[in-house]
Image (cartoon, rainbow, N blue to C red; front, side, top):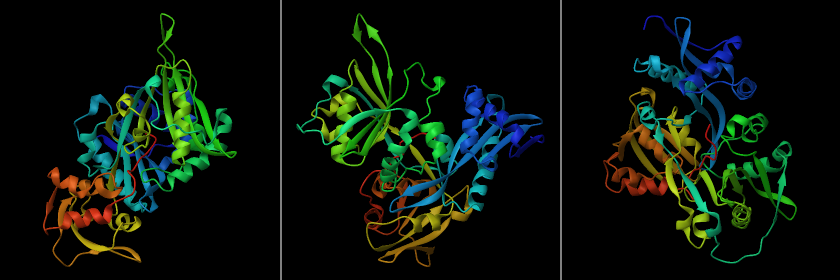
Length: 408
């Protein structure tokens, strides 16, 4: 397409940029959304494609501080990726991905992360499924805890405009130890996580914030709304949980005791819980939680050496990986990971590989969401040296599954 150009939109073009992005998903930009988007995006991380004077595709990235096992790295949070129906199947998306990943590399961010609207798209560009999420659709009156226990704290409702000062510290305490989460700025809290515009309620009621306080200090919180419905005088209302986080098993129990105890509710639903959520083992009948599994975060290595060096490992050992990378050739090669008491070191290897795999499949193991043994069973890696899978899993093992509580 000779007339196709890709570039960063000007300040005056931002409204049109976001309107185009909404249109690629069949939506419409609302005037009150524009200040929110401007508050969290750096304009030079926005990219669009124009056919002549007409914008036809968008891509964007957020600048994250992203938690990995044992630490954090700067990361590109890829979002707003879409092509108008009139211009699909013309290579425009590939061109945007090429320019975006080159830019991420120039910025020195070791990884890019995203939620995939269509997972098959991103595997082509080296992204690997790195975490999973659990959907919950529980019968409120059947959500009974296995063991009786007195509450350790008290729940109270707080106005949304006062919530950040109470819940941000709880979030940060969990974020620092949970791979897959990212740091939230004040703008992110106020403009997104605690924002409650009418069009984002999807017919539900207003957003509420409940805080669990133990000895007067916040130790957990839940953001939720009511989806109101009645039949013949009987409530069929859903309690829709947007986010529920607590700092300890006792606070977690108190938090869900509160959510399951809200009156005039038939079902409690949540779309994005960690795959290893302790609630499954806290209730007497986990089947009544009606849990379902879905893909969550996808990770793409930009600087393989920096990414592998940044995380912690569960053992001291040496592992040589032959990594293929068709889209970002600079990450391809035979790499030696050496882990000692002084940390991890990654260099180009001088000996034969232990394992051979694609960069997307290695990315699936990076946060601890999948094991090398799972990759082997799925036919996603080649074992060059016997015993290498077991050694790799001993290195990459993490104490908990990765989790990102929010789609971005």
